[in-house]
Length: 377
Image 1 (cartoon, rainbow, N blue to C red):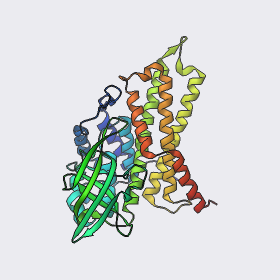
Image 2: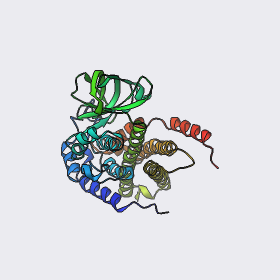
Image 3: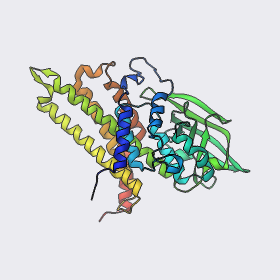
């Protein structure tokens, strides 16, 4: 079997690398430098450069100005974004476009997709429910009312809520069916309350008070929310992989030039063993990510449902990125605690991604249930 990326996928990654080349993690807000520091909106200049490079429209077909690429290509771009802590809603926007293209109605797609692909409209997703622990689709109710819908409820920790033009909100109907609502931020009844991420970014609690939506603004197709959740998960794993890549390179460079007793730290066996263990973590994160992204793309029959591959990728991403940044700070010594050095920013973002993915033990339990229901061999 050929496991190499296609030319189109590699071209997307190369284009992303070029766009992100001038992005410095020092521009990322640092709560360590200024307690309570929070960024004022996302990086609009970077967003424009991504649009000019056609990287916002990757999942869209040609009729909407896109390249028709798959989740693997999106994850390749997100990996590059993670390396520089890019402050743009690329994950949420890309996942939303892919799902709206696949499941949205003709009127919604005609109205939204081309503009979003050009970066004129920014999309985000509410995926954490009311508390961050309960299923997100249960936090909001959607009921039909005449020719449209009415939404009631609240979603917590919504990224880019104050900056995006619309939020994709999962909700449940009277029949306990999950739907996806495209809620404009300025729509009557939408209320935002500030929240703050571990990484220093501003999140928002989105409260929906009798918010009215047109029929075209609600996606009722079965499987839409499940696909969106899968894309957000593997995309988060891709961001974690990018962070891990950059942090391991930073650690290698530092231990290669920092000397102790006249020798570089990298030549000490204890340092080399720790670095080797983290390299193994990184390769496991990479392998499980591409397996999950490919399964989502191909939808091929397998011994386990796609959820099994996604769970494995989540386990390695959540545990792996935490171990990588912790080892990096340990091997940097006192320098790793310097808040003017970018390593602490990577640590904060890694912790935020770990929290977003959830504890590995929960994913291991999910994987165990899947194995019990679908025995191998």
